Image (cartoon, rainbow, N blue to C red; front, side):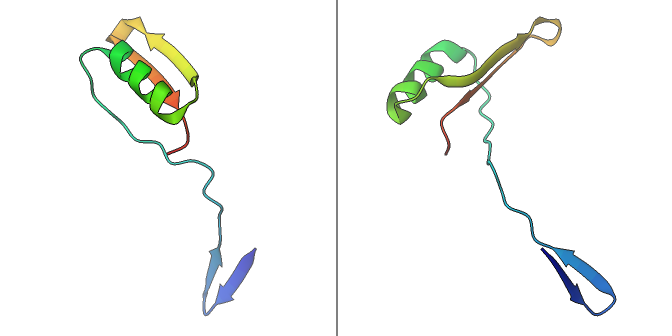
Length: 61
């Protein structure tokens, strides 16, 4: 959908997901907690060992 207002073109976009970042010392207990809380397994889980990073996406908060 495109809306014309004066000299500007304004478009409306649908937000598909909102992600939150949590910085943790140990991912596993927190991941287990959120999987139980939201009754859903991690949709995405991967590791970037070069920089010591583990990422997970759980639920739709």
